[in-house]
Length: 257
Ligand code: ADP
Ligand code: MG
Image (cartoon, rainbow, N blue to C red; front, top):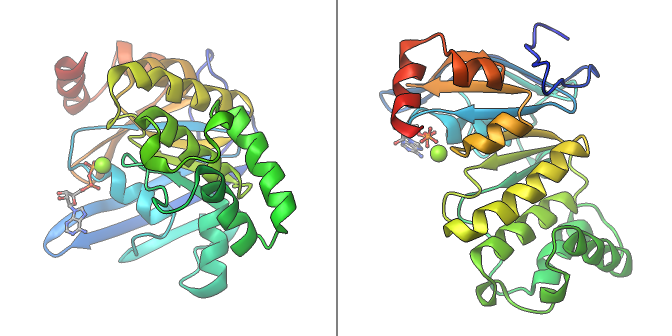
């Protein structure tokens, strides 16, 4: 499977590559925020991205979803280069679900409508089918009873689970999670991680930026350690946590563990 390291504990299925980044570069002014990034993600693989703040993790996720453009290099998803605009871009965003630290639900829409909107507008489903799917997904993430409320009436953990349901409603090929539990009160972190664990077990291809080391150990097939715009090392979770090879990773782990 194209050189992807796979742990014995968490073997990834060998079903080909879904995402291929080749020599990707991105600058913000003078800041070289993504530096020659090469990264391949197999179908069904769970990749956890770890690293110090400012290292480029969010920019990497946003580039895969084309919320950021790149300056050079190539990003191919499911065999196709990222589209620049228009209907193809909307389809890409639906294919690559994204969950942010800050939930980003539509505040003026009910929970149910948050989960039906994209299905109707982008996937062109009829309202009834979209409603049924939304209710099933809200059930799956454990917030079915909140369907008619507005986001502000929910806890942070509930809002984040709605955000996951909203992304799943588009039948994405993969999911990006950018620090999905960082804004949550401690007692709500696990309810979100459990939904993500289940998604991983169900075979979803996932890129997860997180400092939740328990999640990384149990769900990741691979850990990518990013710092200063580079992938410094990528290896199995077992190897990364017990014996990281770079000084940078050792230093980072000594501060967070
Ligand atoms: P991380 O998610 O690892 O904390 P980011 O990808 O958010 O890192 O940011 C990487 C660097 O790029 C940081 O120095 C950040 O300040 C900078 N940066 C991020 N977004 C922008 C932007 N839109 N304009 C200018 N600088 C940015
Ligand atoms: Mg970030």
